[in-house]
Length: 304
Ligand code: ADP
Image (tube, rainbow, N blue to C red; front, side, top):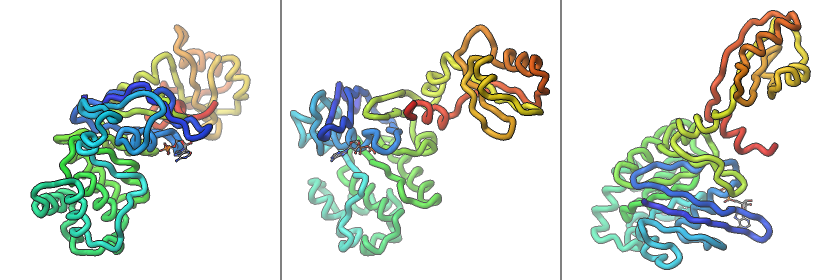
């Protein structure tokens, strides 16, 4: 197991940022921490890296307890903080060489050149960091996280603020990293985890709401629920429909609705068809729907 998190809680004053979080992350996985702003993702990452102390619980990285062996853990980890603090006055190569020295890298020159190649920085490596585009600055941040060739890489919101082309490039870079290491990234964007990660952990209000592969989280969330999309030829009263069908009703367009109900022996398609017949409203469309990741995310992280 690369990372083992047991019963972590953290408060900032009265703000509970993490509430008894436990999580196991296996070797070689790309894990996405997905949650709205303020969910606790950055705090969890800072606790894994040892930059912030938890109030209770424990974290171990590759078998080393972060509280008991902070220096060993730092050596095993690479970390891109959310703000990606870089020395903008320095040149790319100069900065990475300094970071390599600080990390105790043996063959610095070679390592810096390898990393520059790996992260696609070659055309920009001779430039001052301050003059780079946001996408290239992010590559420099990822490069410093990788400079010591860590087994575990923690990337806090690695694609935030990038344009669509840069996002695709950074995603490819991240996928490439996972060949021989564990990557944990955080994001508030669903497509990010679907595009990049093997595993997803949905966090909200300091709690883990769901975790597993994308397929597992979707099927877990769908369990016990049925959903139907329906379009009528004439107006129907949504409140009455909700009451008669014992279903949640979302109006998604003119005379079009998404109905959701607990899974029972009554197929929602049949009861909806009978509702239309009973009220003499012709049906234009009726189909069973499965939730996509966006529906699941919204349902699990929206205050009701
Ligand atoms: P996320 O990364 O998911 O956006 P954070 O871990 O940054 O969430 O924040 C979780 C909660 O803890 C939020 O309510 C945030 O305001 C609070 N928080 C985070 N860092 C601090 C801090 N240094 N001081 C006070 N409150 C903080």
